[in-house]
Image 1 (cartoon, rainbow, N blue to C red):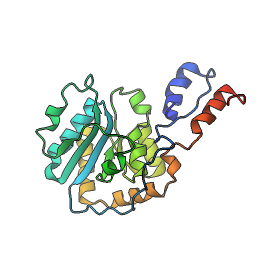
Image 2: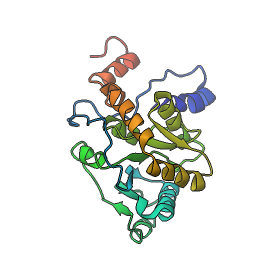
Image 3: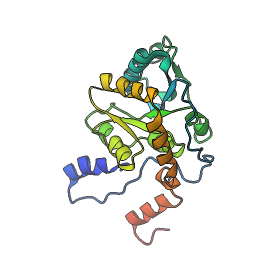
Image 4: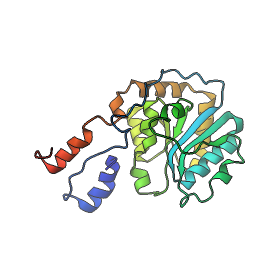
Length: 233
């Protein structure tokens, strides 16, 4: 399971007393070179606020929300999309982005090679997902909160999700309530006017140990030992 949400809302509901669960978060993989973590200061105070949506771009509502932010805030924001669009979930993708000068789709990227240069250009990450609204989209913890966290970029998540709980428990980001079509542009407008809280969250992220964001070496081996017993080698 990638978060406690799956245990609480699925395993306990359907398999109470019949399972042994292990949490394997969607952290950055062990052993790769992600480069040094950046300086704690935010310097882009007089430039548009840069929002990133990175990874498997599979959520039509997220795309529509970000397009709404782009329309409401104009040249006060830039929205940068990196990754692979899920065409079965978002059949109309480029035509949403291309008419908006403040939205850019950068295409596929390589991990870990491209991660540092992607995140160094961002001020905040959108970490919402509604592809399986009411179920796994509420319970999951997406890769982008770990990638962004490693590089000191705070996230925004929908309230009432496991992602929002993770962000608030560590005091490293923000959440927005429904209706997001109104609350998200308002929140981002506030951040664009005053970025002090982003600097605070950035410093908090960069003060956390690497293994909050990067899976420690041997972690999966220890999980297998827990499953298979002491004879596992």
